[in-house]
Image (cartoon, rainbow, N blue to C red; front, side, top):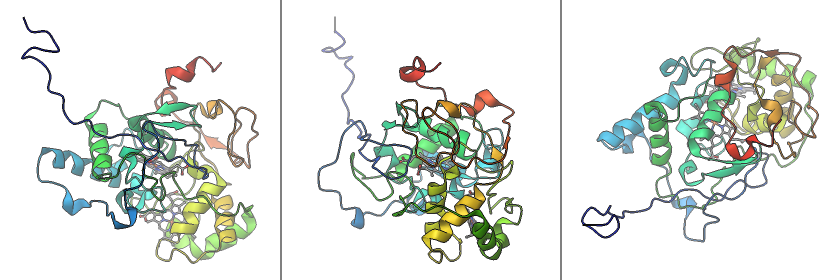
Length: 324
Ligand code: HEC
Ligand code: HEC
């Protein structure tokens, strides 16, 4: 009788697909560290690598899933109204279908997880990372990890990570690129600059022009628990990528002023945020209280989240017992 290991019923050993890389990095990100497979050796020439684009999606079943994933990123609230309840799409921040190096690129993300995130105090797999953006950046609800839609998003993330080796330290692998100098934004200057430079698209009330121009504050914007709610993270996004039609025209100080002004307004709450950075060490500009950290410039008020429990990615068992 064949045994499991030696008989004809033996399961073919196939290719083991690479997953997880070093990245994290010092940056202002939410705390990285090496991915599960350590740091890459030389060999990957990032300058010569071009991420696949929509036209490269294969015309087969996998391609259909990849394409659905891409469209979920581009048209998130339109496609998933129960989960993406704000005015933001994934591509509102992850510009150019997640390929733009200065806009928290998703290219290569499939090779960077599982990864330790100091904000969670735990090793996180890619679907949970996607759900941190659903619940915090989109101020929405967590997408079931086993759902077809989550699988489609993961298929797209894997597709735009093609040929990126485990451990490759790509530009932007730690999220938004850290600003060289940590400046302090001035909200009065930020307001003046906003009125001349940003209002035309994002509106005086910061509400944007749905569906293509996203809100910057108010009930339909990103939550207080999003990276973008931190002054330095927002300054990086704004300095590198805005105004959308003329990026590169702001000084770093103006970007900090604008970030301070944008983040001085009310936005959705993020339930459970006080449990972030459970080991301490929150970045200095975190706008809410966490262990050993006092809120930096918190907005005057927050909009409650009607479906609070769905707005939380469950804390991994490894840290659950450390929280009261
Ligand atoms: C409000 C802006 C914003 C929106 C909207 C947003 N994200 Fe993010 N996302 C970020 C930022 C910023 C980071 C990087 C963290 C940092 O820089 O601190 C990030 C990181 C990620 C990562 C981790 C990438 C890596 O390799 O470490 C994934 C995956 C991700 N986002 C997926 C998504 C998906 C899917 C959506 C839509 C459901 C989405 N994001 C919507 C801002 C956003
Ligand atoms: C020409 C129109 C336009 C102008 C002007 C503009 N934006 Fe944007 N902004 C966009 C669009 C569109 C997006 C979504 C990403 C994309 O499609 O490129 C965006 C995204 C953003 C985001 C990330 C998503 C979100 O909603 O939080 C921030 C922050 C932002 N803009 C801030 C600013 C600031 C600050 C200014 C002024 C310096 C500015 N923008 C000027 C069109 C504009």
